Each structure stands twice: as C-alpha cells, then as structure tokens.
Image (cartoon, rainbow, N blue to C red; front, side, top):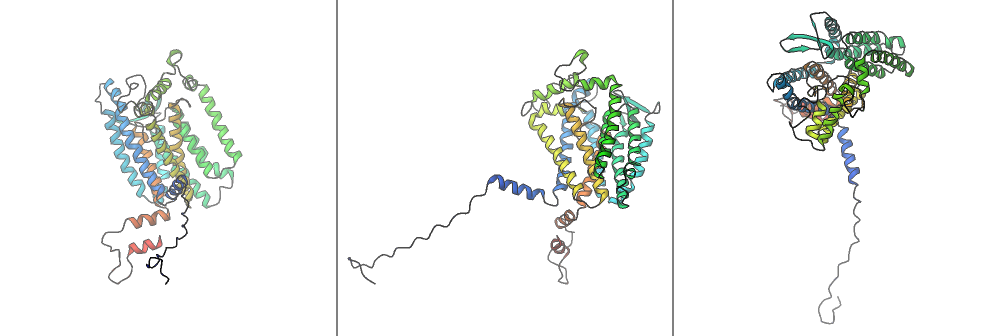
Length: 441
C-alpha cells in the first residue's frame, strides 16, 4: 500500500451509493377511496348498516319526541313525559319484534304472509264500522285498544303487502310465470287496489301513496315491462288526480308547495312554520329543547313535522345526520336485495327498502316545502306506535336477510365461536370448529 507524504496510510474514501428512489406517495383521496371501497365490500357491511342505522334513528327519534312533545302534553294537561313514555314503550316492543324477526327463518316469514294479509284486511274493514273506528284529524283509520292507546291497521297493511307480494311473486318466478303480464298483475294489483280502497274510505291519502310506492317497487323488481309499468302508473295517477281534485283539503295542501306566507285563512300555516323552524336552526341549531316553534306555532311538532323541530334544535348538522342514516339504510337494503339468489328475499328486501325510503322522502319533502303535506310520519323517528311496530319488524326482516348471505354467515361464525370449543383442536388432534370455519371463509 503506498504511503502518503506524511508517512501515514491514505484514508480510504467510501464510495457513495446511488440514492434509492422513494416510492411515489399515494394520493390521500385515492387512498381514502380505496379503504372506503374495501369497507363497503365486506360481507357484514349491510348487516352493520341496517342494525346500527336503524338503532341510531330510533334512539335519536326518542330524544326528539321527548323534546318536541313536552309543550303539547302540557297544553293538554298531561305530564310532560306522556308521549315519550308511550313512544318508549312502543320502541321496547318494537325492539322485541325486531329481534324475533331477525331470528326467524325465511320459511316462517313466508308462512306469515297470508294470515297477516287476512288479519289486516279484516281490521281495515272493521275501522269503517260505526262505533269501532275512530277519526283523528279527519282520517278514520284508527281502532281504540283501551285507554289512550289506538292502533292504525293501515300501517300493518304495508308490511302485509310486502310479505304477501314477495311470496306471491317468488312462487310465480319459481314456476316461470312472470313472463306473462297477466300473472304479473293478477292477483297482486287487485289485492293492492283493495287495500288502497279500504284506506281511502278513511281519507288517508298519505298511507295510500306509500302502498302505491310498494306496489310499484314490487312490479319493478319483478321485471315488469315499461309499457305495463307506465300503464299501471297512469291508472294510479289518474285515480290520485281525481281524488285530489274532488277534495278542497287536498287541493289546499297542493297549493302550499313552496309557500313562504301562511296565506289567506292561514291555509299554509303548518308548511310555512316548518320552514321557519328549519331556517332558524342555522348550522348547529339552537340547542336541544330550545325550539320556539313547538310552543304552539307548529302543529304536529312531534309527529309529521318532527324533522322541522330537529332542524331548529340540532341545526343543519342534525338534519344531515338523519338524512345520512336513512341513506345508509336504503343503500344496505338495496345491497341485500341485489346480492341474494332467493327470489322471496329479493322482493321482500326491495319492498321494505321502497317503503321506508319513499315514506322518508315524502315526509322530509313536505317539511322542506317541496311536496304537499301527506300526513305520513318519518319512519322510526316520529311519534306513533302503530307506525313504529311494523317498521321495526320490517327492519328485523332486513337484518335476517343480511345475516343469511353465505359470506356474512361465515364471517359471523368466525366471530362467534361456541363456548367450550378450543381454538387449536380437539383431543384427537383434528382442527376445531373455529379453524375449520376460518379456512372455509
């Protein structure tokens, strides 16, 4: 080794390695989109959306019913918690119905279709009997059960039409009869029109619109041709036009769309004060319980117009949260209906999703002044046990269908091992049930 001038060995310089190129940073928006897409594609996404979304809507509805109904109860010389206690009792019974429906097999749901339809037709006819049926707000659609409790059979008619229509179309699809238009319409359309006639005898136009939406949803899922679909829609539209033109009350409600003043004789009082409540809420609202419109200015503050009180007390953030929960519930229902191979599950899930989505759109559209006031409650949110009980049973249907998917069933089996089973294997050395299910998944 040559020495340097100073006699010391020369210092060996380390050769620099070429810089390793760093991988390009992933776009955070694309990364977030990828994660969200993976989350949507998981087998239990629909199950958690239906269960969590419905429970959140119900709990928030209980809070808003308690806030919006206090003044109405005190004005009627009742305790401030009167309506809240009745709603809480209905929600407790509804939770039991939801649990039962979510654990029932599909065959039992199909077996309930005809008895439920027959019972609803009998009760809806019984409403028109003098001395039995009761009239509330001009609509005779109620039957007194005892004390301050009443039931509205037309609300249970929605569930009966969904179950019976889904079972009927599923049996006809199994026999390959839906390719003929007469088998697609008969007897589904005549029975639906019979229910609509019984409802319209009591003057309840709002519930009739929801039943019509369910009928159209079932026909669309059954693959009705466009001309047949348009024909049924035209007949229903013509009947609705005649019913609206022959009623001064319905014409007045139609004239209140987009109104900003109460008008002559305060015909648009409720619609205008609903807009006032939403406008005064701002971004985050005036605070829970601090609504001004519920002090006698806004009629039906805890039933049909509870969304307006929500906007006033919780603001835009609260109303958007409610809309997001309903959107998630609708998406999960469509996903369950689209991924199943069972025709009954497809029709029933689609019918329930159509029912809840259409009713929410009609209620919120009326509060926003975009649609006429139809007098339908906000599903799972407004006060009313007759509307809450069948809706929660329908949510239990969706949960049962979401659990019944093969991938969801395997994922739930992985997360819920039986007690007393070891994860490693049994005494014979063979793999245990937990590992076997995990490998299958």
